[in-house]
Length: 165
Image (cartoon, rainbow, N blue to C red):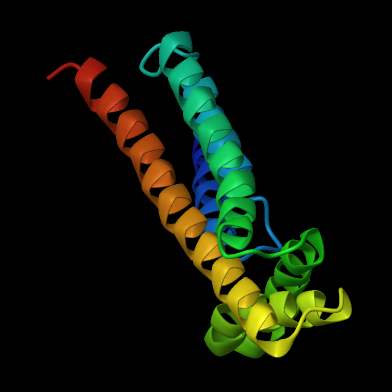
């Protein structure tokens, strides 16, 4: 039995789950995409997609992870949020998953506002913190999506660039 078809299905499922996880905070999106692409390279014995390409993909995944962490914190800090607002935004994003798209968009904002209020801030300061945390998470998600699509593009290019014919 040829296992390569099943392995390609596994790789594709990992990449699709990773794409979803890039937007949904409950899934580790970028690592799933990287693992899916790594499995795809492994299927071809790293002939079409070699170790240099894997290294580039790994570096992009690392950049996405750093951006994810820093953008959320930077957005919240820029508008004067405390660490409670940042963690509130993260928790709000997780709870927001259960409320669909509106929950994903509004959860981080309300979580940051509640976190800031719990730290004793006034409503105006809490609203600014919520806006900053929300903007940070939106920017981080956009950058992560761009990096994930770049990773997929590099992978596909590496396959087609080495395929004879």
